[in-house]
Length: 272
Image 1 (tube, rainbow, N blue to C red):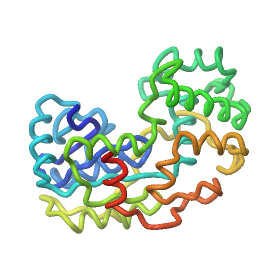
Image 2 (cartoon, helix red, strand yellow):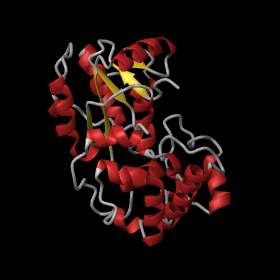
Image 3 (cartoon, rainbow, N blue to C red):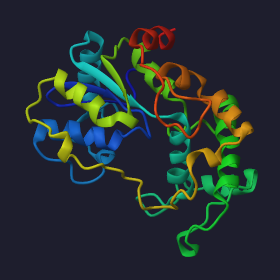
């Protein structure tokens, strides 16, 4: 299996296990800057040089040797499961992707047919019942994760613990896991623990939100999207994420963690 979703600076100063919808664009750009003194011109997910990625064949032996020997500081970043699944819905289901098309081609028409999901369009200002459609999307997400139908689960809404565990299973070990909700403090901990060719001033780093502006704005507070049934579905899908990363399942309106992440527990539970 190797180390899917793993990025490493060319200087091997740091290793990062990407977790989709958890500030990965900003983190990748910070890593790129720390090696080259400039940000990548474009979406960092499209970069094929300047950053080692498991998806690039030439990078794989470098990443594998480093991670198995635990030579470099390794980290990842997590996010509240309620806001993460909402972000996935608005970005991947409702939004127009950077190639100008809908995500995964026929996915949205299939969701409209099988689940009655509406997503609006740029022409009508993305007018649709966001709460109703999101709750129907949640049923679809649960079906993909629990039964792998009508398709395999997508990386953007599969559980964070699943992404994070592959790194551990194959011999990696994390030095730090931090929250998107306290990004600067978490990233400062990483940068303070490593030596980089170029210093990074976090206060001057822009937020690289590649999905912003391509779809509808969220019209309601987070908690409005989650009734008792949808909270139950979210817990069914993301139980480990709530427990390991200390998020508040009882209150969808509280995006902040309610305890400290225990790295030993993460490695024990996700290494099983």
